[in-house]
Image 1: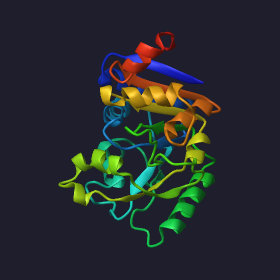
Image 2: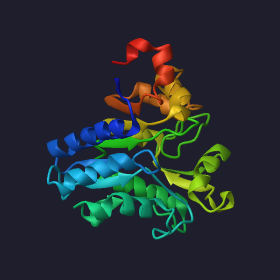
Image 3: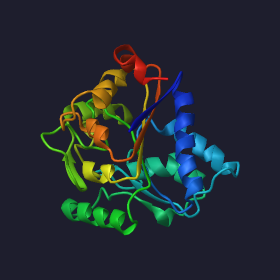
Image 4: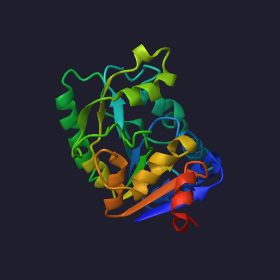
Length: 252
């Protein structure tokens, strides 16, 4: 089941997403939470930090797994996802850093690193809630459009459109890594709950395709239509504008 939560602004939608994540942690203080990077979750993370600082939520016994990491970047590189998570969430909350997990971008054998990360996730008993963004081409994690859905953690060659989209974070496009390690679609689908955030008119067309279009690996996020549990999408009016136009009954 896909539930659409529409808020007027990105900040308001981010607060709604933070409440969804917080409810999972309050109901299960030892939850395994799947986290994401990029610009979309930043305001959500700010609200979770506020909640933790105010004593409204605790991450002391929570474990986390991240969707992905660039190949070739060290954890202290300012564009690595390990660095992003530390700066935007981990160092501001009471989580035990030993309980936080990301793929290693510096692994000498990326294929072996993919297997290691599969084993880490399996050892935790799976993910209670997985946070996702959605790329302009429909990717979730770094699962790019393809002719099949990936199952396990994979080594990905990033598409030109993804490299272009991420170039704004680097000094030049040439510095954007061209490969990444990502949780597979099968692992995302194995989570108990999925929380997806999307903001801005640039996501409107692809979000409509993901929710209402054909289920196809050409639009990886479309697989969420087959999710066994609850998918909650928190989005602003701009990101839901095409859905509102084509499927007005889908929104409250």
